[in-house]
Image 1: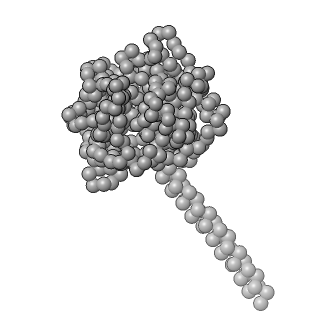
Image 2 (image 1 turned 30 degrees about the horizontal axis):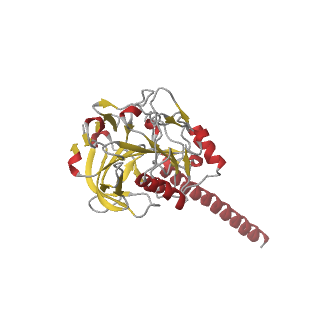
Image 3 (image 1 turned 90 degrees about the vertical axis):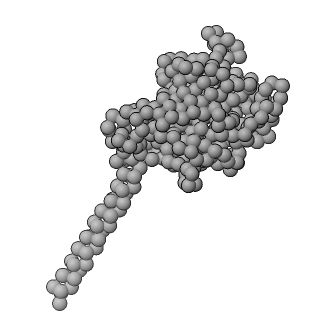
Length: 349
């Protein structure tokens, strides 16, 4: 009887031990599967595996260590007047919006993850309401030099976290090799100091969907996108490189590079059509960017027509295909070109 009891106890202990081992293996497999889904099966451009614990950064879908995924984004107004060229730091932005400001002159809203190492950004220019709408979609710190009366009033009434050179001049500097007012610059070291001073750490914004890059055999062999904002000084061309699966930017007929020679490249291009009108003697514009409208999205060398939707000033716009499905973009930089009529756009796939 005692032998039977000992055998039963031994058998029970063995079963429990076996179950614990199996259970741990099941858990390990689940965790490994989740880790693989977060990046272990993805490879970088140099064919190195991404660490299993990495996840996609919310701002641009690039795989990063989780501690870097939720950095507070910073939106910087960057000049595009011919006297402001070449810009500095524009090639390091994660997201860039380009739209007309005054007359036919365009201006950029460059959005950076706060983990950026950009040491020189600018020239920084003044705020406008519709750029503010885009910045608020990310809950971003908004960096600018003054602004239109409407934009400044909104920053105050909507409690937008901002850094204005007029009042926080110690975080900016002016240079002699650019003529005023196209000569104000900042750095991410300075912007991060301001974030720390104001104890700004978190931002809650909508994330886009991302996918693995298309296999070389499925990419278009070539593609050219032309956007004529006004005159030749602001003529934009994007030329696709199928091998690198990226678009190179040309401005006024020449390759667009930062002042340090870095070419401006992007993985995705979005073209948004919006309604706009001139509202004052300074030729400032009002743009309707909350709502929805026609859009084109270009990635992997292919451009297709769809739509954009932005629910409110505090929501990031989303891009959809003709069937109403949200687009999955390639991880990396995205440029958003905002135009006012279809005649400004020429796409050759």
